Length: 187
Image (cartoon, rainbow, N blue to C red; front, side, top):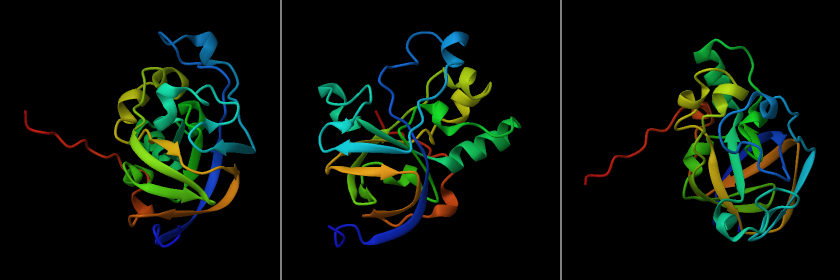
């Protein structure tokens, strides 16, 4: 598999989330936003199913998007733009928060994180809840850098701390917090 993923990067897993229920449903609500985030030290990933204990585990409609990954640098950049101070990246409800990886470049690309192979898919677009749980303006500010929805292709365990990311495409860690502008297709 490593020959299919020739580019190697030392990254850090700075956040892991497995939530048994969908929290951000309907209109943003202060009471729901105040609940603690379901942080984990480790998560168990199952091929074709997702993260054990997560709300999307084994749900057919989410098999190609059952693991979400975001760059911590995206939240750092947003905090600087908004002048808000530090933001909790797990409040975005992404399962895996990486530092040191240009996550948005993994859209549509295979990659592995500590041996867990993931198929990068479509963008994990931000929702209006982010204005409440992160800071006013976060919903708009996270566009193009809300992370990537992924399909797990192998089983494994992800843990907080140093990790190795392998990808099929070269990444530029210096661009980890940059927003990606969508390509407009002619009609």
